[in-house]
Image (cartoon, helix red, strand yellow):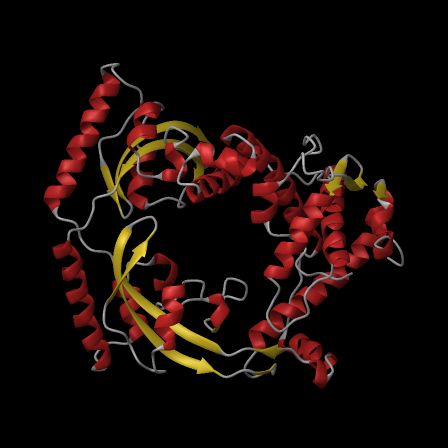
Amino acid sequence: MSLFGIMVSFATMAQETPTTQEAPKASGQVLDKIVAKVNNYILLESEVQKAYIEAIASSRQGFEAPTRCDVFESLLINKLMVAKAEIDSVIVSDVEVTFQADQRFAMVMQQFGGDENTLVEVYGKTAEQLKAEIHDVMKEQMIAQRMQAKITEGLTISPADVRKFYNSIPKDSLPFFSAEVVVGQIVKKPEVSRHVKDSIANRLKSFKQLILDGKSDFAALAKQYSQDPGSAIQGGDLGFFRRGELAPEYEATALGLQLGEISDPVETMFGMHMIQLLERRGNTFNTRHILIRPEATEADIRDAERYLDSLRKEIQAGRIDFAKAAKDHSDDRATSDNGGFFTDPQTNSNRLTLRTLEDPVLYFTLDSMKVGSMTPPIRFEDEREGTKVRILYYKERFPAHRANMEDDYEKLKTAARRRKEEGMLSKWFVTAKEDVFIDVDPAYDRCNVLEGK
């Protein structure tokens, strides 16, 4: 069993899952078809195709990319885990699924700037249709994840396991890794004047009064005025979140409301909000909001630049460590807890290949820097929060090299864990396949997924 990552990327599946009822295209496009069935769960050719493209695009640098049969097998095992979970009473609550699906849907809508017309144009589905589809895919994925966790429960990887895995690879077949860099940042969000914030707060209060007077309703105002593109199209509805998932100020205000009650304006790092509590389910809650972002003036941005320039001089003089400065002063939550350093999402390592740096501005800035240097304050645009300022620290560079235990332990540990998971899943597959009905389309007979298991 070749495990390229048993959980295929949700981004591809959830956003573009087609149905077997699609109408024929004038171009003669072949209708989608079922390529495998596991009990009542089906696997579509389109799922395999999209997952294969995604797997190739995200395959680990230095390691062999998965084959189409690898992808088909992994997707089939996902279906088997879902079918077996039903038999073994491994369940995921609807609250959990709704919470995850709402978050994913909001991310999709944000990509389209909250414009449902663009969504329909690209996917041929309305927002409600896509939301329901994401819910179904998300439920299946979460059940498969929970089943896999049960199967691999207790799995550990010791240094001896990593070394054994490393020694099992022929020396001439060891992965070749591209050059890697360690880069950090300290970000400052310009502080907007109190006058601007008060003006926005008064505007939100006027919205609240319109609603209370029955002259307008929350959803209509959110669609017209909210600057949160992911939720505006939904009338401000954010969907379900757990405690600790939203900005502290937002959460504290929302949970202090009665059902249906509308808050006074509240400020978070994202801007000024007016919030209405819609529903509470256990440890989750659903709200809608109207967000208006205060815009920083040129003077505000220059103040942020001066602040970071002073901090930079303190670091260069050795009076404060860069990592401590980032933890104490950076406004970027994604990197501040890691001492300001960017991390590879697959390994959580601070060492990144240049292709991991998806921001082209960051890439070209590094290209002109020397190792050990730090930039003066640089302005950049944040899609959600507007203009910000940062300083970049180019800490280290590692040349291209063959994999070795000293430089690549974390990568090898991840690969060793996957190998061990393969073994556990293979043993499970032998008995689990006897408890379900599996039918594979002849087009995939060549993959031999049911033989020798």
